[in-house]
Length: 393
Image (cartoon, rainbow, N blue to C red):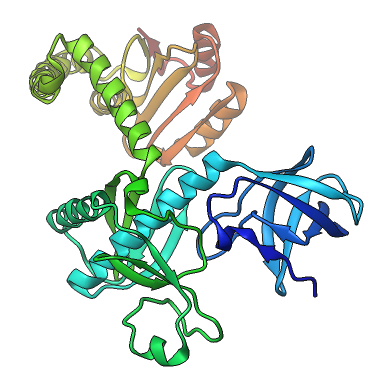
């Protein structure tokens, strides 16, 4: 087994280092490079691995297997050569901020409510944490406030390797039983946890924590959060969206909710009026086709729900099969076909096959769409719904 000196544990801020290639092994998808020393952190403890370069060769990911540190590359390196390693520092620092912020939130939730962090994933956009107990929005608001207060105290993050006797006296968090040399990370006043990951050295470097959501998950909850630079990016995105809304609604930036609420209420009233008018028009349409037998209607601008309602009232009046089609912006047509007590399964199957459509439903009522012209629709249904049954609008 080849032992590699882990520079990231000696100084988490090493961005560039010199190393000697000890071995280069060919893998299934490239090569595994082993060095005498490395600042590349391997995937582990919920934290993704570092990426970067060795010389001019890209390091895609880094893994620890059987105690060895493997750098995954697409090209080989000759054993014995010296290389300069450079980690992607922006990525590393972002992960340090996320991981450190997650520790503080988890520690404060454990202290306040006794819940354990039973699942943790550090994604490229958000951090997710699973807790084994319920949390309400007001509780998380207080956790967020307290976490940020602790961050701004800018306390030094303490890392130690206590003896077995000392560990027995420490109330540290851990998801599993640990043996051997155990690395303990302390965020003063917030968390004490066994962890192998990389962290900031002072809490102020986390910048800020923002809890985004909380949903019920298994016996507890799943929390989404972001830290550091991701909070700034999130605030910029939200601010940009709010600015665009304020311009559209001619409202001040701090009054957009009220403007949207007014527009929503107005839209609700207008939709009610439209629905009432539709019901009147549909009733008139149904009266026009009373006892007409099979009917084909092609109407413009109907939404799917209105299409269904029109088909329903006309089929109840016409005494036959009612087929209603309405054009979509892309040139296709949505449809609804109904027949009281009928069986439309065979017709629907042939319709979809002939007119490049898809859809279905109950034997007596189907909905779907077709990629066909109005002329093709009329031609097909004129053949299938035989005269004198078929009448067209």
